[in-house]
Every structure is written in structure tokens, then in C-alpha cells.
Image 1 (tube, rainbow, N blue to C red):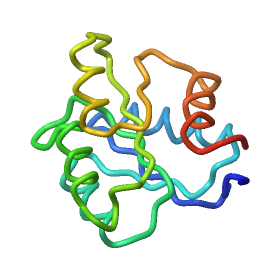
Image 2: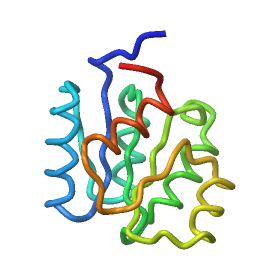
Image 3: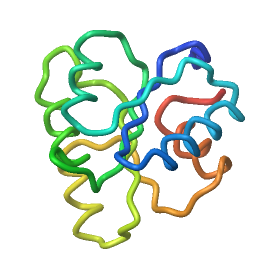
Image 4: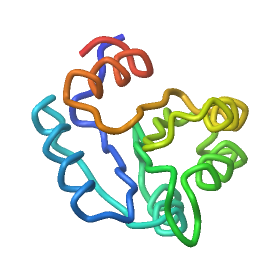
Length: 128
């Protein structure tokens, strides 16, 4: 199945610079419909109001963390199968395990580049 390059992607990070970096990387990969949210609860509102094909979320955010957002998404009947990639600066195995148990689709440790992002997206969405 071909990946819809026009799908909406939601990028969630409380750090504006990171949102800009992710937006630029996704544009390099030819994705153009990119929305963002600066915390988990804003992201949840957007996810419930529009159709998204992928969520890329930071782990460390306040007041709702990325893992809490992931749990909310997986617990929502309408959103539970949505591909979800978690980004974190922490490579601690307990975080990876917690994210996997919560149903994360894939995991990226900072710093990363467009190639890493693409390979994680391909593993979740298929080739594009």
C-alpha cells in the first residue's frame, strides 16, 4: 500500500525549535500537510477534530507528557490504530519498554536526521 503523501501529520513538542526542525525534515521527505501542538492535551483536541495519518510526539512535555498522550490515543476507539512515533532524548530501556507497552509504533532518540526519521516512518507506514 502506498503512503498518502498528502496525509495530515501531527507533530507534538513543547519546544518551538524542535517543531520547526521536524516540520523541515518532513518537508524534505515531501510531506506538506503538517500541523503541530505544543502539549499533549492540545494534540488530543486536534486529533479528535481532524483526520491524521501519523503522530510524531516528544516524550517530555508538560502538563501532559508524550506517553500520557499515547495512552489517551490508544484508549480512544476512533484513534487507537493511529501510527504514533515517540521522540525522546532518553534512551533508557525502561522508557522504551514503557512506550512499547503503551502501544507506540516506533521510537526515535535525539539527535536524529531526515534519514532516521524516514526509516522510522517507513517501518510504521510502509515505503514512500
